[in-house]
Amino acid sequence: EVYLAESGGGLVRPGGSQRLSCAASGFTFSRYSMYWVRQAPGKGLEWVASISGDSNFIHYADPLKGRFTISRDNAENSLYLQMNSLRVEDTAIYFCARDLYGEGILDSWGQGALVTVSS
Amino acid sequence: QSPLTQPPSVSGSPGQSITISCSGSSDDVGRYNYVSWFQQHPGTAPQLLIYDVNKRPSGVSDRFSGSKSGSLASLTISGLQAEDEADYYCNSYSTTYTWVFGGGTRLTVL
Image (cartoon, rainbow over all chains, first blue to last red; front, side, top):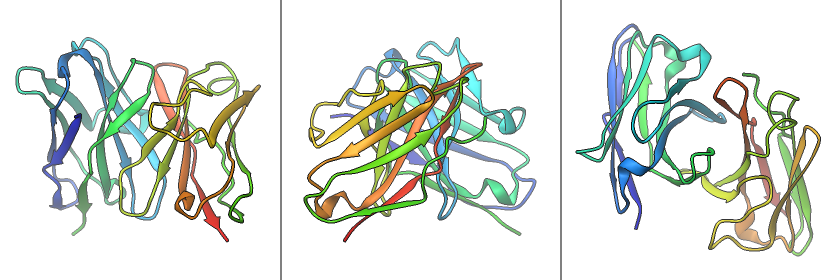
């Protein structure tokens, strides 16, 4: 069974940094593109970034370019999101998700990690 | 990367059919058949309902169906059940390797 588990959420001051992790199991991690999607409290879903299985293709939502970095370690079956220069508006639940066929078919999601940016 | 446009809310009675619209542009819904729909119950992660406009993952009820005409995608739920009450989001591939979600639609089963 596919299982994704995010960790690393918490309270961070504006301007600070946070690194999220997503541990994957139940499938051959390296064969799948992975995504980060976030959801601000009471708001809708927002695509954050995506990375191909071999890390050769990485894409970000335009507003987040330069502040967020997606990466993965296929040997550790782990996905990461490094977030720098955090702003209050980055407060959200951050989900990792698997892309089934490389077409944005997000068939499996983690339970999410809450990041709160506040002074 | 403007979000796709969905109605904030829809409602229906048990047994009825409802349709949720998702309006995009020629840069996303109108250009690509990479449209997905997700269901999200409060406090849980989204669940994939429809992908590639009208395909259902295994395990998803055939009461859920998707379609597209031009830049407008739609999700239809037939035979409404109480458990269908949730938030629904559309998603589409867009130009320059980006993805865009709709703002979400709250479905209330009366």
